[in-house]
Length: 512
Image 1 (cartoon, one colour):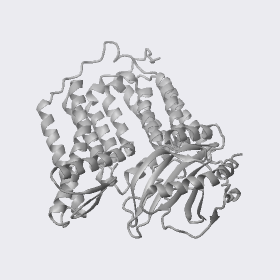
Image 2 (image 1 turned 30 degrees about the vertical axis):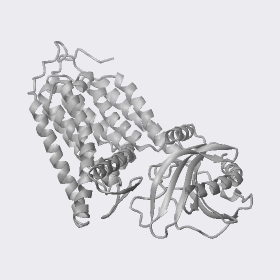
Image 3 (image 1 turned 180 degrees about the vertical axis):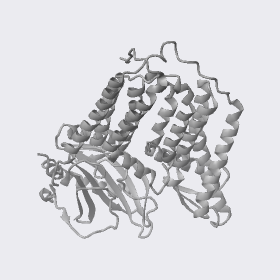
């Protein structure tokens, strides 16, 4: 499938036209999939700076390619039509990511298409020569949200373990803990995710530039993954200790973040210094195999490959636009009825769920005797980016909320009438009023319930891709309690037994 011809044009003469085709095709792909590119840049620009390293990945990759210019000059670009099959799969992946509102899949597919463009127009041997510089482009994709909660929990566990080991008394509730000197909460900024991602990028680059044997590269890359996680545990512990022994005067506010980056810089310098002891000199690459340098690419076939790439991307872009023009399914809230003696009443709590991008939302407070229940329905009539049933930004309480905190959140079965269902279970506590709530959440789509985000994404993406109704609802109920959560759990169980059958019938009736 690799094209050759008897054209006698020397290797250097093939490069200008082929590079122009690579550049033109890449720009066309970026223009057609500009929404994905802009979404990626928007995340780089986010206030947290967690993914700001994305801006430097492309310049570094181009510099790594420039370093190999003399080796590249020995090769002739040879179009490889096998890459078109891979490009078609990546286009399908991009379309699936769009349908599932999974930005990370879209973005990996976009970067993969850029790499595949190089393969299709320059050939496999050149791609193999540039394997790391091209693969390094994947680091542009802002990924890592799935690690935030595990890293938050590790940091909290590490800090609490050390504090208790040195004899400092504390009370812990989830990721909140209290010392005699003050209260602490491990949030996203304390998880170390930004240090971790920066360490991975720098570690990969260091191992590529300084080692030649695979096991050394693998060992240093593993260190780049592990060291920042452990170092962040020490960082968080030292911040708490400094604040504790200074009567909460130091290591707070701006100096909290300055200390974090200084500590990270020291840790990285030490890691690079230790790694430099095993540095290996670069070995000149052997010349290309006899006969390969003289194999000339067919210009016409290169043009065909470029045209096929751009046409395929244009086709999936048009189909995506068609899917997004569907009118959202209206919410069936008007069909919701009160039964079992429950009546709508006055608000009994200041807490409200933070569910993003709903097409319609309903918030009601119900009462029956002394029982009180909050019901929230978030309706998503057409899944799209920014308005999606499954979204990491949907949360019971935002970080650093001035009034509410969430010491516990987990998935568990909960009784509902004669059966039970899996729900997201959370304990919520007001820092000002002292009110305590038990909150439950689950999703309703296609006539069944789900709290599995991956399964829901796959199901909704399938429906959207095949032009079917992809509407869904997020259901949240909450009840107050005094001393024990079991009080609220009993109220919620009674509410679900009475109200849930009618609620589900109303939501299911929305589908055409």
